Length: 267
Image (tube, rainbow, N blue to C red; front, side):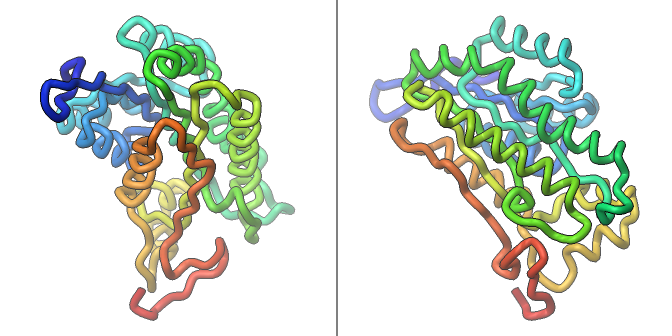
């Protein structure tokens, strides 16, 4: 953990802000933890895989917390831990993922259920649990933040994607509704919607470990990388207290839509 204050110009000091980042064992979550630590934040990196979290802690100095976001009791315990160890100024709800690319008529019901459980209900559980802490921090410091990492899948359909697009649309609606419900409070609700991002696991998990299928998703163009999204998240959190970035959509230049990617053009 870093010191409780971060140096500013002259003799002024500004309290260090503390962020919870979920899904932090790899990909966008790990990149976000690294970026926020570099920007001077205290970071609690949360995920299921404790070994990967410990490696991230050794690299960045972040705090880590192993948790299953599908477990109500475990998420409540995480919130209690945060309350007892300094509170919370921001949550980055990044945990999520896609499973399969099946047509509706061949849909894997268990896969759909799992996608809703982690993308939608995981975000809901964490947000409900930490919102009192964010309200407290916002009242004391001027602003606190809920950042939900959704997807361009929330913005349009594509064949084979109904389970994932449905889950991400639900997460988008959660974000928008929460923003309306707490309008006027010192808590911002921010949504970051990435397009195609080449990470070490997203497509590999989607295709059940089929490395060839996973690699083909990113062939012939330059996709985004996790650091691009971490940079966007950090920017939204750095805005002045009166500014809310409702929604940022970030795509590779070669991607015009979920199903429109221009390949083999050098971009």
